[in-house]
Image (cartoon, rainbow, N blue to C red; front, side, top):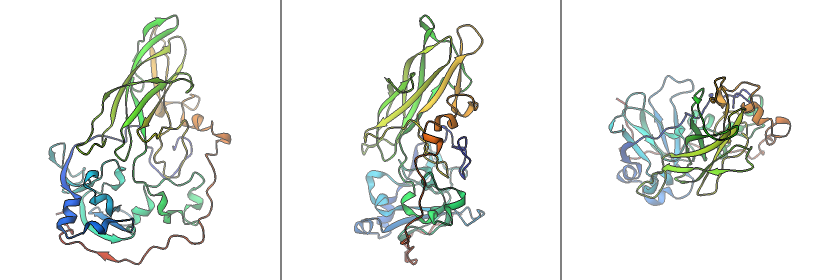
Length: 350
């Protein structure tokens, strides 16, 4: 989204995602052993706060939380993990312990866990409030602080949204379509799609006419957990007819089983998160007879139709979807700290 307008977030691209096998203890079992009762997790008033050992960060060690009810629901499989892909966690991946919450954004996966506490209300950690949010498009650096947007809990991200990408042909790859007519050839395209909350991908589809018509892709891999939820990405592939003598823009979108679907254009937000507009690539003649070059969004020039700024310009006046307004006078009142420290939950990273 920084290609549309510079914000405070990273330059997230389509590779900021992965599927990993974690091994650990169910957080529900840990809470049960610590004496937390099932009724303690009812409603949104109590949270499990995790804080890491990375105390060199400005504004203190990274910490955030999950609603307690999520952690106590065994079907959601929230873990205190100690292995990754069958091996002990590396330091980069959070040794010795990290929180893992399938279907939820990675910002809740606190690494190097030092303490776990059940708290009343949202955690007070700086990073819980100042990171991993999708704020309205009119919120910018100039007004995010003075209008109190950081203190608005409703914009805190939990479940991932439906998203996906084209992986093959990859960026700058030269492909030779299989001829299927005059000036037309077929290219096999492959990619992934996923959604949050354990939802499965219902449809993955591609279009070469700007979204007027869509071709349904084939699912090549879709896994479910023992509790019937989809925590992993789904792989897809499709045979797509493209022009061999001129440029073709190929759009991809996915829909999950809750009928959430990737939108046509991105909605800019200050932290640049949850960008899930149609994934676009361009195939254009490479200069060699019968060959096409693949151009992906991050490698597109400002003159290319798939450049994010040009896609975003399709929104009237290029202003996004509306202006943010000042929060009402009854802004969130953060409760006084009232910690209920659970037995055996305070851990050292050593």
